[in-house]
Amino acid sequence: MNQYEIQGILHHIADVQVFESGFKKREFVVQIEDGKYPQNIKIEAIKDDVLYLESYLLGDSISCSFNLRGNEYNGKYYVSLQAWKFDRKKPAAPAPAPQRSAMQSGANREKIAERMRKYHAANPQPPAKVYEKNEDDDIPF
Image (tube, rainbow, N blue to C red; front, side, top):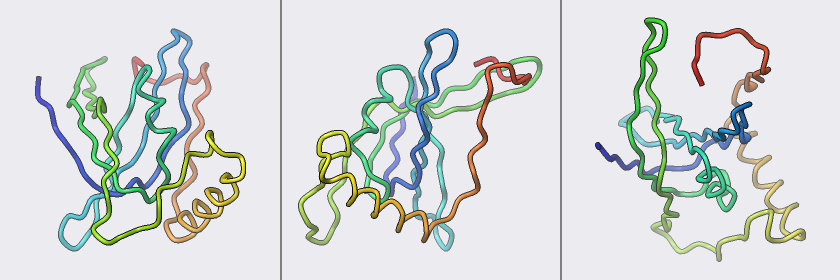
């Protein structure tokens, strides 16, 4: 099986999606430098791996190993990048001690929320589409 690795800045973390079958998925975006224009690469964590993203904050430097997956459904082809290993990368310059996740410290939540507000203000994104379980689409998962 082909294994790939990507290194960049954590740009977006979506909410966990739980499907009727019990399958869990969480998408996240890693921004990488690619010449003049940075690229935003969407990757997904599945099953129990969705929990690994709890300890990361937007703007963190991350390295992620993933598998390239593809399938066909009703004559349409789909590709996904499924993460299986996460590593926090240390910045080149000295930085303050890493913050604990929001789940670990109630006092730290406001600091994290402020950091996320600043990050989103500097990096606006279109609103995410909310998927209803009755929504008719051609995607098999």
